[in-house]
Amino acid sequence: MKITEFGWDEGNSQLIVLGHGIEPAEAEEVFARTPLFRKTERGHYVAMGPTFDGRYLVLIFEMKGKGAARVITGWDMSDSEKRYYSKSKRGEKRMKKKMVLDETAEAKYYDKHGVLKEIIDEPVAMGLETELRRAIPSGKRRRNLKNISIKVDPLQIQAIKKVATMKSIPYQTLIRHWLSENLRKELHIK
Image (cartoon, rainbow, N blue to C red):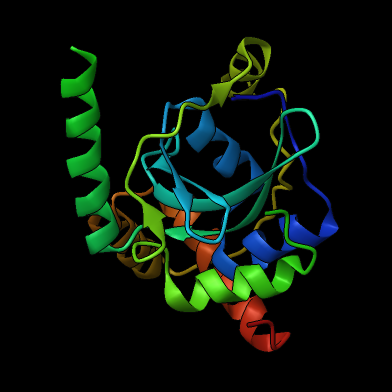
């Protein structure tokens, strides 16, 4: 199965940005880096893998129309998901040598229950169309982020960088993630 485009709109992009601090461009990066694809018992697909900045994500998506992947939800990999990903990727290397109308209900289900119990542990043959794969790293599909200036105590910056290093992500990504989490709380988005 080839993915020829991504189906982003206000609903699913806001859900992953505000709900989990994941930019649509970061989600697309996971697809561009040859992720681990699996199918769930509920008929959706899972893409697990790193972004270009090394942030490991789990993305739940469905296929729409002729090759359009629509991300339903996503999150940072838990430790158990990282172990599953690592073990499965090693296994794949050795081998090589239902459409849902209420998308928010599906997103809430996966957000609450996770995905490991739902995965059908068989490889799924899926990949990006060549042109789309080339467009993602070049930044052509990246959403424009807006630069802002704020004054922050140097000790806070140092602490943020330390936390980001411990999480193995860039510190600006960590700050955006924290902003998304707090926006979600303030706006009462679950």
